[in-house]
Image (cartoon, rainbow, N blue to C red; front, side):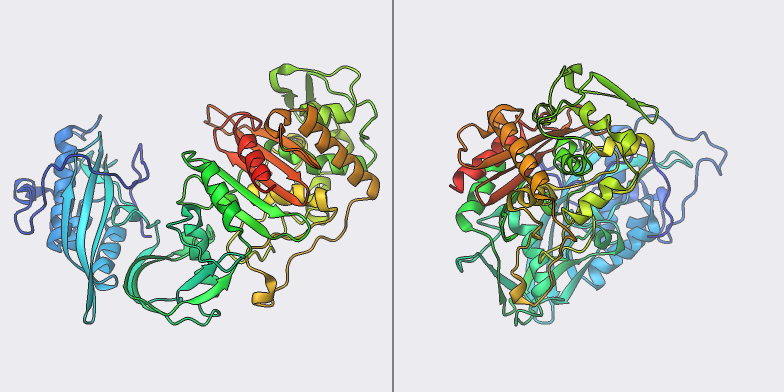
Length: 556
């Protein structure tokens, strides 16, 4: 998006709720900032730097006056329609000018009124009220945003830290706003019983519904309406973000898409993550792959389907199956679980530095002994875990066709210490609750069934398959170890009262610069499998475990 000047202490712009309104930027007059600070920029975006003038470069924390005046200058120019002047007040004039020009030309936004709130440090919240007009149609537009002021590294002058989210909080860098005929006709998503699914009733489904529209809008037989929408750029598409409708000027005719979601279980999943901003969970049917519920406490990103996080010890389910198949472990045979084990120059240890003397592999699995798995690294090839994940569990192939965008797990080939770390779900291994629910489902059903949200019969698509299944002996041992973990191991507290034919595995994954690890939990009961993560939740037994267990109980 053009060249941008590096700025120390850069922070992402976030939408902010405005507490007390300081003033309203009035076109032509505004704060009086444009006249008061008029020497700072011009219509061509030129600047007279302190360095060029031989003056001392400004440094140190921004003053309140600098933050306020910079925000005033930017907002006043934007509201006046002075795109060049507004862009000159940012640290990336080229990108700012392009997006602000498109705001009027492509998004067809007019009569913009910007109301700043009370600054919080170097961040200034503001509200936007405007009108979106297309032909004879028009509708009011209102939302909150925020900007951050930083020092220019060249001359130290204060500038707005430019990100697309300054213009609208739903925008990522490289995205744009467009008003016109919708790229995809609307869809009416239905649950498995034929009931309508809406984000109003099920907040977690906002991103899911966007994905369904993108995938099935044209196929479902609807006709597009006129709307203001976010059109995703290259970076957002790489992250599998879908275009998003912000304002509908005229409704199109929706087509219908039936999903596998169970309305009662979806409601239960929403309840379980409510108030937990970093919690995500997925529930599926093990024997078919049907996704029955998906929920995220934070609704801006579908972590449950698209997250890419180290799964910690829940990955030991996959690793254990590999070790048993290679005759490197057996459920009831003695297996080493020392306090420490070094490999590839790294020293690995167990939680609280525990050890199990003369214990079995089953005991090490149930207690989640790291060294029991790491100690087998010298006996493995670098690609053994990658092969096991792909060939048996259908992971890391990037070919799942769920019906909406998903991340299908990643188990890269690694060597030395990172390879050893991958055995316990660290290193380069990355998963999400959908992937780990599928792992539990594979153990329960005996073979991989690709998870899906939209039945393949809707569009004739082919589901992903795994190339082989575990041997009967390996499968029986894995089920017994997960059952024992649920009854007497680290998962026992969370799984108390679940009953029936159940199995589970806990996990916690260390993340750089996090005070607490991410807590993971994967489990099955009967024909149902589920998994969840609570980022910065600590031990999975205490964070994600109760969420997953409650869903399994709700499912009967």
